[in-house]
Length: 328
Figure 1 (cartoon, rainbow, N blue to C red):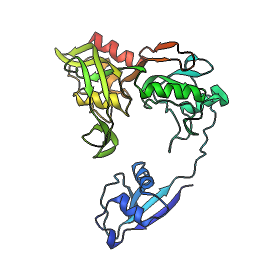
Figure 2 (figure 1 turned 120 degrees about the vertical axis):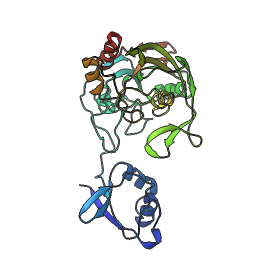
Figure 3 (figure 1 turned 30 degrees about the horizontal axis):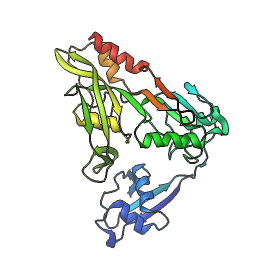
Figure 4 (figure 1 turned 90 degrees about the vertical axis):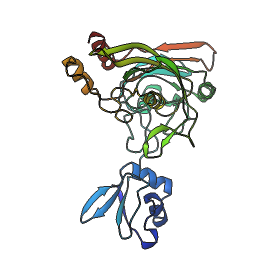
């Protein structure tokens, strides 16, 4: 059961940021921990028996406000083995390559303690996974978003983990994503270089920022353009990652004015022409994730040095959109 803490804002804290005020008044919690609780929806304003969730750490507080902080019950830090469906593309004593479906979280995190790829890997690989990633992330060298599908490699021993991590660090891993965009990128191919960091106005989003971010480079090529009503409407775009930042492809393509279809964070609902085919309109309206797939993954085997290259075809949901766009 979650522990409940109630804090009343004193006059001395009037006008301060929510996270700063709470950190000064609740000594056992750090400001970073409180910020995470706020963003997770565990902080609320108590007024007249009504609890209104406060999700912005920068919100200013007022003297006399009563604020409730809910501390989630402690979770077992060691993920448990769970026999979940696992599409294994390649496996040996050093590593395993899987084709992750959309909707599967890579590793446990607050609010998502199980039913992750890590739980499935523990069940499949036993105790052979590398421990470098930490108790919550055994074997995990890189991640892809929950609602992104496609290829991911995990290490089964520490030497393999170190070897793969070194390749990621020097950007020698070949990673190509396929995306279906709203609109067609202009120019149709190119290089996007923009430092990515937290969006200062919305901490749940990333953005191209002037300060405080990390360098990010994406090379993109338009594979197909689709028109509706005689006007450019969508495109199938291949993105090769030179770096691997959080939400990199989503942020970079959105910066061109061509966000991913189905991306609720970086794009708006896609409006179709009135004469658009009904099946296409329904399929796009009901598409429940960003249209992004980790299509190709290539690297040198960390033990043998052999070059390994893998490809994963578009999953059925994205393939259906592309098929309908071609026919429109």
